[in-house]
Amino acid sequence: MLVTENLTKLFDGFKALDGVSMKVDANSLTLIAGPNGSGKTTLINTICGFYKADGGHVFLNGEEITNMKPHEIRKRGIARTFQIPHPLKKLTVLENLLVAVAEHPGEKLLRCMRCSSWERAEADAVEKAFELLEFLELDALWDTEAYKLSGGQLKLLEVGRALMSDAKLIIMDEPLTGVNPKLAHCILEKLVELKKRTTFLIVEHRFEIVAAYVDRVFVMVNGRLADEKSEAFREVIRLLCFK
Amino acid sequence: MEHILLTILIWFGLYMIVCLSLNIEYGYAGIPNFGRAFAVLVGAFAVGGVANRVLMFIFGISNGIIEGSASVKSAMNEIMARDPAVAILFLLGTLCIAAILGAVLGAIFILPSARLSEHYLAIALLAISEVSYMVCYYNPDIMGGYYGVSTPDPLLFFQGEQRLLAFSVLTISIAMLLYGIVSKMLNSPFGRLLKAMRENDAVVEACGKDVMLLRVKACAVGSSIAAISGALYVFYTTNVIASSFNRAEWTFYPFLIIILGGLGSTNGVIAASLLFVVARVLLSTYKWELKSALHLPFEAVWLEYIIFGVLMLLVLLFKPEGLLKEKPTMTKPIREMVKRTGKGARKQA
Ligand SMILES: Nc1ncnc2c1ncn2[C@@H]1O[C@H](COP(=O)(O)OP(=O)(O)OP(=O)(O)O)[C@@H](O)[C@H]1O
Ligand SMILES: [Mg+2]
Image 1 (spheres, each protein chain N blue to C red):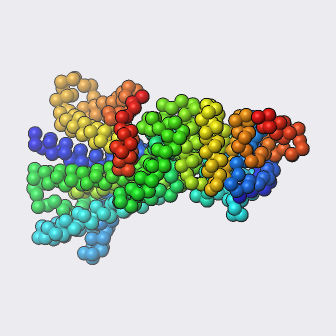
Image 2: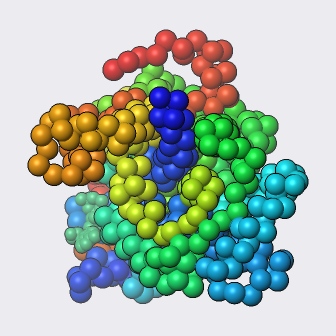
Image 3: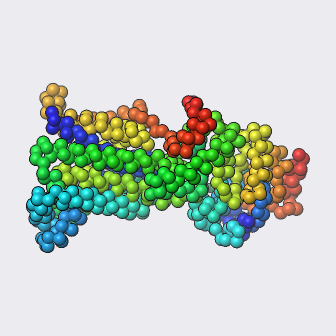
C-alpha cells in the first residue's frame, strides 16, 4: 500500500530522517513507536507533503507521490491527523468536521450558488458528521466553537476529521494522547472495524492501550527504523506483549 | 437636507459594496488585502480607460485618451439623450467590464504573493496597489493621469437633485443585489471553506483543498465586486482621476468598517457601513461649523482622519470582535438535521 524508500529529511544538516524504508500493508493497523524526538512526526510530515524530502521516495499503491503538495497527496488517498491539534478555532465542532469532506461540490466557487447541486452531498456529510460526533462523545458540543474545547476533546476532533474523509490510508499522530482509556479502546475497536476498507498507520506511545489492536510495528530510533533484532525493537515488543 | 440624505445613500451603497468585497477576502478568507483601493481603481479604469477606448474606436476618434474621452463623452451623451436603451446598455456593459477586469486583475494581483504569510502578504498587496496608483496618476496615457478623463453620463436624463436621487436608487439596488449574491455564496460550503482557510491553512491542505487556488478565487471574487463600486463611483462623478482612489478612502476606511462591523459578519459590515457613512457625510457637511465651534487650530478636513484613526484604535482595543459576532455557517441540510434530531437546544458555553 504505502512504501517509502530511503526517505531522508535534513534540518540544517541534522538528519531527522535517515534513510527510512518501510512497507505498510493494505487493510492493516500499523504502529510506529520510538522515543521522543526520534523522527516519527517528521516521517508523517514528509510522507504527506508538509515537508520536502531531501532524498528517497514515497509510493502509494505503486504511484510515486514524493514531494507532491499536501492537498494532492490527500486527493490520492492519504489523510492525516496532527500531533498538536490544529482546530479551526472560531469554527464550530460540526464545521470542523464538515471541512474534511472530500470533493464537496458545494465548495466550488460557482456551484456553491446553486444549492440544489450540493445539498444532497451536504446532507450526507452532516449525517455522517453527527454519527461521528456521537461516537466521539462530542455531539452535545456540535455548535460550540473549537477554541472552547478541552485538550482531549481537541484530540478527538482531530480523529473525527480523519474519519470524516474516506481516505484509503489514514495516518494518525498520537491520536489517543489525553483521551480517556475507555473511549480510546472504543476508537481502536472502530479502527479495526474500518480496516475492511481503510489502512491505518498510527504513532502512539500508549502501548498498553494499542497492544491488542496492532498488526505490525515499526520502531524509530534517531531517524532510522530499528532492526528487528535490535534492543530497542525488542523492548517495544516486550512492552506491547506485557498486556 | 435632502441633498445630505441622498449623499449618504450613495456613499452607503458604494461603501457597502467595497466592504462586502473586503469581508469576503479578509473577514472570511483571512487575506489582508491592503490593496483594496487597487481593485476600485481597476473599476474606474474599466470606464475611463477601457470603455472610453472602445467607444473611441467605434466612433473613429484617434486623439489621445484625454481629448478623445471628451469627444466620446459629447458624442455618447448625444446618442444616449435620444435613446435610453443605449444608456442602459452602456451602464450595464461597463459594469460587466469592470467586474470581469476586476476579477482577472485581482487574481493576477494575488498570484505572486499568495504564498506569503499574512503580514508580508499585506505589505506586498499594499505596495502593488500603491505602485499601480502612482503609475495611473503620473502616466496620462493610461487614464488621463493627473488631468483625468471624462466619461459619458448614462444618467443624463435626470438633472440636479433628480440625478442624485436616480443615482442613489441605482447604487443601493446594485448594492442590495450584490448583498444577496454574496450572502448566498458565503452561506455555503464554499464560505465555510474560506473561513477554515483563515483559521488554519495547513488543515485545509490536509483536507485535500488547494489553498493557493482558494486564495486566488477569493481575491478574484472580492476584486470583481470592488471594481463594480469603482465603476459606479465614476458614473457618479462622470470623470476619472486616479487621485480619487487613494488608500485612505478605499483601503483604510473599508478596513475600519469591516473591523467595526465584525469580521466575517455580513450584516455587521452593512450596519457599520451605514454608521460610518452617516458620520462621515455629517462631518464633512458641517466641518466649518465644527471648526469654529471647537476652535480648531487646523483645517477641519483633518478632523475626519483623526477621528476615524482614533475610532479604529478604540475598536481594536476595546471591541476587537466588532458590533456583530460572526455566525456559524448553517446550510439548509444542517438546519434540517438539527430540527429533526432536536439538537436545537443550543448550548451556549
Ligand atoms: N521543523 C523542524 N525544524 C528543526 N528541527 C526539527 C523540526 N521538526 C522536528 N525537528 C527535530 O527532528 C527531530 C525529530 O522530531 P519529531 O517531531 O519527528 O519527533 P517525534 O518522533 O515525533 O517525537 P515525539 O514522540 O516527541 O512526538 C527532533 O530532534 C526535532 O528537534
Ligand atoms: Mg511526534
